[in-house]
Length: 312
Image (cartoon, rainbow, N blue to C red):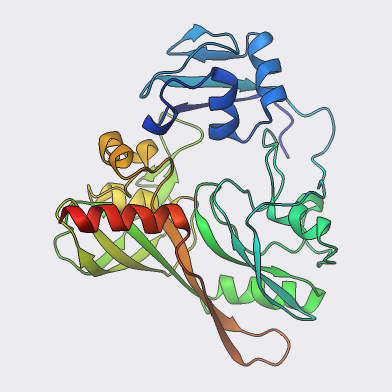
């Protein structure tokens, strides 16, 4: 694990227009308000390249850059209640979690917000001890800004078996996303390698020397300004759906990082990308039987669909 300081930057979404800097940092990067204020006081935060104070107001589209000091000690799992996190299924081998937006899968350097692992620990769940200390039991992840289903291994056999199933592409991962415009063709496959963005260490992009990545998409419903797609992943690269939809020139609505129109997100009341992990299917590590779990859209995504449907 790297112990070097990190620098991260993001554009301010329209939904945070006029917010205090410390509040915006907390929402965008997962810091506590206290931590955000400390970073600003230490001169670690800039707005469009200018050092900013904790009470400065942010403007939509401005770039916030924050220098995150290296952690003084290895990242630890902190048990804390996670608001809105729902347990879908629980048995001796696995626990299925419906992860809300704004929650990371596990602790990582620079992230001080809530985590799935911390929420499970607070609820008294004992999970597999396999894997790195801060991500024990985690066999796959969802972005902080993506909601939906995650499976966490409770037993050691479950961890080993689920890792095998993800590696062998046995697991069926389905997402729904609302993208800008109307893809042509309306159903298809994106087969394009994904690697680090050439000019950003926190973004990803389609690159010649990236890792093999395949995304299948099918139209669910077309609206005047956007299309609701059903997504099936063959591979599981970081930001895969977001990168591939952006490469098609139809970024996920609300995903300003990958080129989405902020005015559309504002009109729909979104402060994150419209992307939800709706279904997860796999062979149960206990008996080998196929199991599938489903998740409904959270309130912010349902509300956005209602608005754009009424406009069509």
